[in-house]
Image (tube, rainbow, N blue to C red; front, side, top):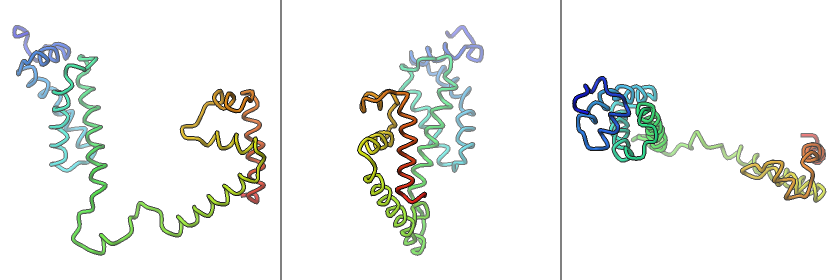
Length: 187
């Protein structure tokens, strides 16, 4: 590997050399892809300090996962993807902190949470929906509850659970929803 100039070496060769502990291969990887990692951090509009953290953590992840990279010839794409995940982690963490010395800001309700009025209305709508659902026939209740499950089951799974032909699930669902709307007063 030392006979081949680093700028001519393919990514696969660089990764293989880095796996074996070749410091110059590591240096070349950072030289080749450092600007790409910085570009990803800048695209996420991170502060300089956060961008530096993303840069360091991204290359640290490469060090810790160098032996498990399945496509060493795509190390640049791997680094860019890892940098994106790190940026999102930083942004999620940043969203949780509210740096302020202003007590009014700290005591204010969270603007991302629904207001008490909207929560009350949502609770009332939910109670009304559950009451209307309870007034439907037992087969409609089972079908709609099953279709509202998270994660949503496939029609094949619903058909097996309710012993119902797959082709009749959609039309039956439509009729049940029509009855439910009628129970809700046309909402």
